[in-house]
Length: 83
Image 1 (cartoon, helix red, strand yellow):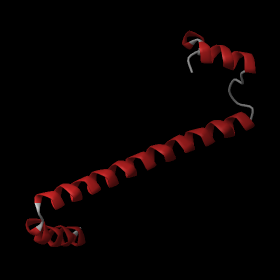
Image 2 (cartoon, one colour; image 1 turned 60 degrees about the vertical axis):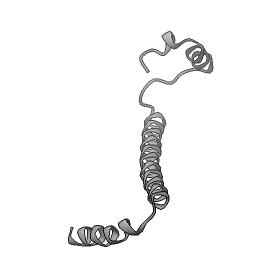
Image 3 (spheres, rainbow, N blue to C red; image 1 turned 90 degrees about the vertical axis):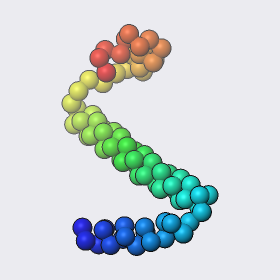
Image 4 (cartoon, one colour; image 1 turned 180 degrees about the horizontal axis):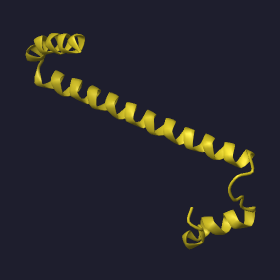
């Protein structure tokens, strides 16, 4: 924690020296970085869910759908059977 506050202090030494344009640019970089990190977490979460579903399928757990059932559900949301 002390290292983080030291880093914050060092950053703040430079902040007043930046122009408005430089501050805006740096802020956009920070926002993009945080946004990318969030997207990466969501992608990882989706991958884990898909892997879990695949493992259940391979173990014969849960319901399997025929190709016709899949097409019907794709065309009619009401037919999703609570998926």
